[in-house]
Amino acid sequence: MGKHLFLIWKNLRRNARRSILTVISTSISVFLIGSLLSVYGMLYGSEVREESALRLVTRHKVSLTQALPYHYRSKIAAIDGVENLLPMNWFGGVYIDQKPEHMFPRFAVDQEELFDIYREYEVPAEQLEAFQRDRQGMAIGKSIADRLGLRLGQRITIKGDIYPFDPEFTIRAIFEGPDDFNSFFHFKYLEEGLGPEAGSHVGVFTIRLRSVEDASSVARAVDEMFRNAPEPTKTETEAAFALAFVSQIGNVKLFLLSIGTAIVFTMLMVSANTMAMSVRERTREIGVLKTLGFPSGSVLGLVLGEAAVISLLGGVLGVVLTLGVTTAMAGVMVQFFTGFTLPSWGVVACFAVALGVGLGSSAVPAAVAARTRIVDALRHTG
Image 1 (cartoon, rainbow, N blue to C red):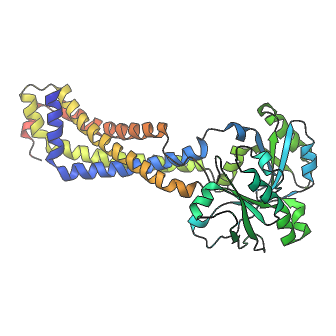
Image 2 (cartoon, one colour):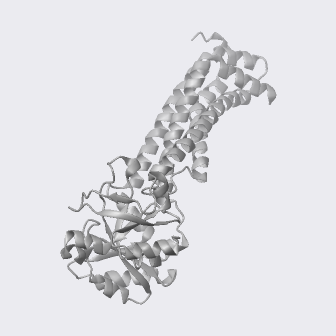
Image 3 (cartoon, helix red, strand yellow):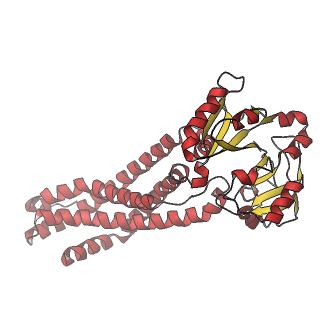
């Protein structure tokens, strides 16, 4: 085994530039695949928390851009299995400028019901009271406050883009908890700024269930109630609702799969060309090895071993690069989704792809080298 490893190492150093470039190209490909897997894991692989499982979201059946009548609230609240209900309007707007670091979600809500619906959020009692009493009060997540340097009592102005209204807020509460990258303000304040008509419709209703077992029955009951109404509804889990935003751009899973397949194919072509060149250059040496008593299996193992080492080195560099980049970008992505990192199964998948491509691309050159007759190998001059 020792002599085989020594020969593999010597072969890699024979053309160090080519070996290094192959490792780099493999690592870049693994990085791209790892990034795709990180996006997939963020969108589809996150575990559903217990509190999130107790919530459903009711929206317009046609599109998220269509609003629902506010009077649906009392009808939905009367359905068996519904514990509480929160009307929510996405406000949008611009804080300071449109740079990504200044972006954070803003929702107009019923301030009295907010923290009964989202019980995983922790907020000091005095801050909660101040937020509920101040019509222009805003409650923001701690991650937003830390990122933007916001503090209690600070006044901020949001320039409206969806709505022709530039509200001014005073930060009255800073809450902590999972996904604390949202902010909330009074629904009545939005209504005052836009007129009574604005308060007659809402974007979505967030439903808190009595138990997880009520989810399917409540969802069916809500949608059946408004099936023939002018504004039909679609009720889904909180996780499914979050993915509804993503689905507006198309079939994301197919998109990720297509890109991943193209990357793997490119890796295979580059690696196969490299291994073919490497084996062709060493044809005479392979003949010498066979003359010295190396069996065909050993020759096959040498070529495959060289490919495996290059692939694993590229895989390690690619995984490290992916983890570094996703960690650096997590602070930006948390504005929209959490969990943007390469999952453990993604690390395994990256190494499996790198090793699979390396061995697959070298299989044919290795087999040819193993079958080459000594006489033909020694006569080779290419």
